Image (cartoon, rainbow, N blue to C red; front, side):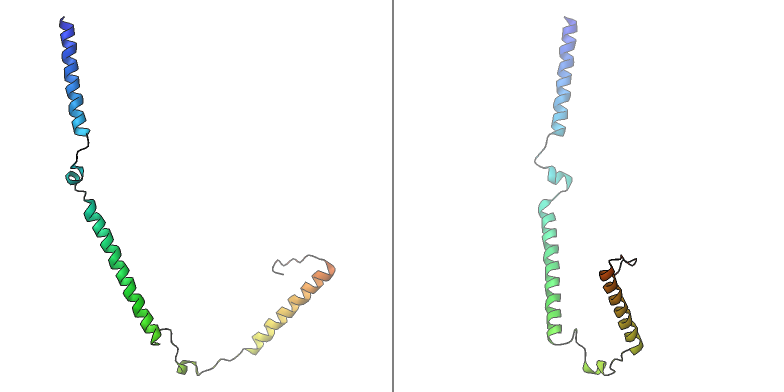
Length: 121
């Protein structure tokens, strides 16, 4: 009889431990407040940040549009281009000679059917 009483007593203690652990683990309604998590304030911060960023981008867009429209940005005055450009005749002749040489090599390759060692041809 005594062993049965000890086992029932042990079971009651075990059930109490289970109930205590269940209450500590169980989700309560105030979990957000207890942990300092505030979803509404977090979303408010995120939305305000994106709204401010959008406003800054819009203001910059309008500013650049007005500056370009009034020829203050991307405008080259005529006085900057008065010097003119000179063509390097020697370099031009060298380039045209190289092009003619490649053209002859391609014609020879097409007519003879020989593969070229230069992969750029």
